[in-house]
Image (tube, rainbow, N blue to C red; front, side):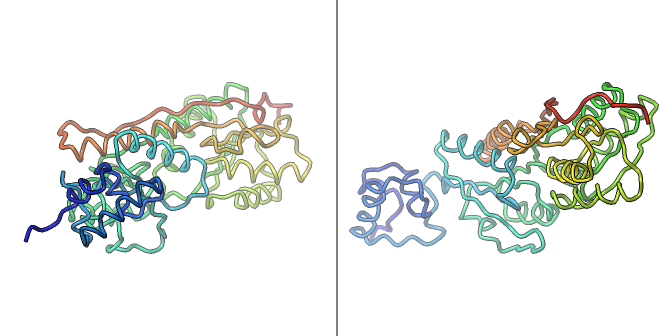
Length: 333
């Protein structure tokens, strides 16, 4: 008796291979009429797919996995949307997985060879473990915003050194010399590179940083650090914050103590999160090209899957977005 395959379901249902794959993988983006055709064909054929049998006839599942640590980030959201749009144009379905950075699971569902054709890993904290596991299983992968220097993995990154440099240069060109830097944990490569850019710009200008503080990312942490600075009496005329959340927290704390932004203190952030253009004053920041990051990562991964031997990591350029939170220093201090 001939063993049934997914191609039999395709022929019986009259829909595409990609559509059958999406139905088998419980994708929510399939039209209900097509879903019913596939389900009816499966019933009539008595087709019983196991995880291996879900692979498409061309040796693929038609599914790309994307792992990330949070959905509550508009830059990550923009990257995911860009990846999804590119993959849809190429006939692939995107499977998202929000993972716990405190827990590494080598048996993660996306790490099973017959589940996905490839994986995009977005800003992984367990990067070393993920790279080892994916290579061991032979799953093609691309990392966006990696954190290991000199990695041999295929990556898509933004030039964070240049971003930190341009942010600081902007403050210097406005005439600031009492400049602080508030940034995140140093285990992030992006944090280290932004700090290096900050330090390079100051060194070229012959300026010493007034204050430099590391903390965890988040609005509340920016707020608390600003309160500490105020208590210590170390108040710069300008601050480069390592991300927009920290910048917003700084602004709120300083305004609550009567400081005017930007008249008394200029603040520049990093990322261009969705709220950056909505708060008052609107935040000057360094924009990450999230749409291009997603597109390039998806393109690189599909090239890998299709057997391309000419793949190289990509370094994209950030943009300085000048708004209302930075200006010339009010008076020399």
